[in-house]
Image 1 (cartoon, chains in turn cyan, blue):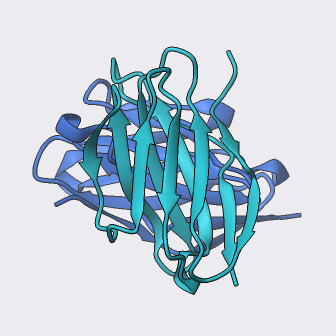
Image 2 (tube, each protein chain N blue to C red):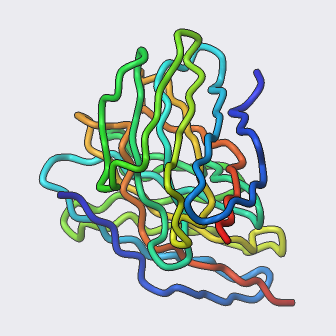
Length: 113
Length: 114
């Protein structure tokens, strides 16, 4: 089974721009969660999508948004980028059955200049 | 609210020595607990999980962890460290009601020396 894939792997953007990141979950997984990882704040939960609906949300401003498509692929969007948005963005998928473990993708490294 | 505390941001052990990475959690409900490992420029890989079954949990690569409710701890151990174990380790907690929302500790970087 293929793992979680994220595209692109690396991205450089300028302050004020917007960015869209993509995540394809493991086949059969319907829940996709997004996390931000920074040296200062560590790993923080952004949001979770299940069956095209946002089910849980972390404490991030409205500039951070996401969506999920009918094939469970998910995108997250960050508008009006700030320098502090530079981070590794990780996507994880889960089956929501059994032990609920999450499987993570390799991440997208976003640098805002 | 749930939280995780990992004691020691850096741990250094000799190859062949015992690895002990500490994790204490706070949760208002019986938690799910996980240990993940992250190698440079990679995502997180699940090492092991506790979901209210056996309190001693065995994971991949020879790691294991013991859930101790009285101490609210879930420490990660490995009897004999290998150079390939050098990485960053994260303890995380979720509650069964929102299992897809993980709360992570700040991580422990494990260094293995010859």
